[in-house]
Length: 386
Image (cartoon, rainbow, N blue to C red; front, side):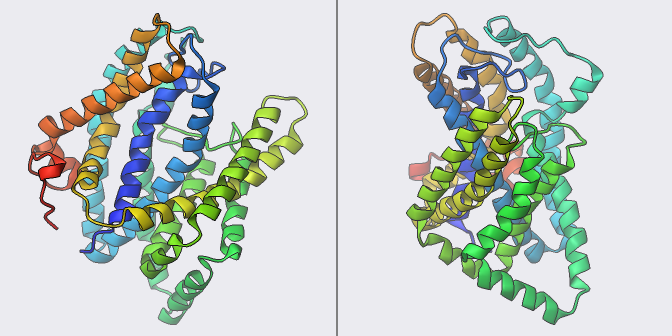
């Protein structure tokens, strides 16, 4: 089976950026109890912008890549093996991770709340627990739902005439790298984003997530699935990377300006419209740019990136309790927010990487997460066994 090194690296970075945003939320200018269990005395507008920039692109990129690799597995293994693979690699970590992490996160959050300068969280009702049931592992639940849905849709499509199926993929191939495709993708994305509560991508850890969220992420997942059917299109993403990235960041800046100006205001309909009108194309243009970036510069075998890719899953699953508990330790330290962020992020990342190396990589946990055990060898001595 061919290994797509650039896309694999792209996925690993998208996962690990979760540690960045979960650390940066402690230093927002304004308290937000929907995100924070701890708010530091030091504030940083820079880290707040970094959070929203990453938040805009991380999960759309992740679900697009997830759709690509899901089609890869489905085409190579068949429906039954595909579902078995998804259950072992996604379902089991979701259930075990939720059971183990829920009490640990509760303890870490209690400690953080005793040090916060932000709002106290007092709601512990059954409804609140249900809504946060899957914690930061909610995306695994979404992937399970999309896996089941993808099999059903694929079987329906297989009943269509082969000529129609081929013609549809031919149209997709013809327009993927045209401005018309970006406009076409931005339109339904914008409609769904307009329904979001905070004028950006919402998040739900509930077993019953809002349809607007499922609809939005399914667009990216479906695009990745189609992209695998015409994998020759990957080459085209390498073109015009820096122009696309510049336009995406410009549009994101305009989105952020109108969002910051209008969110929470009584008369904000125009700001809301303009914010989403820039956010939708910014998201898709940015995805094209970031995907092209990794395909151009990281699409080659690398022991270091392979090691990071293998470890990213574990690192993301376990990082949150350490981030939440470690940030309040620095509550009384008089240094700027960026330095506090760097310490919490750096310590958590190194700690998670060490636990992966010694407790996961060559154990049954590694088999759960990565499909098989890997030798406990540091990257610069590692031989890639393809």
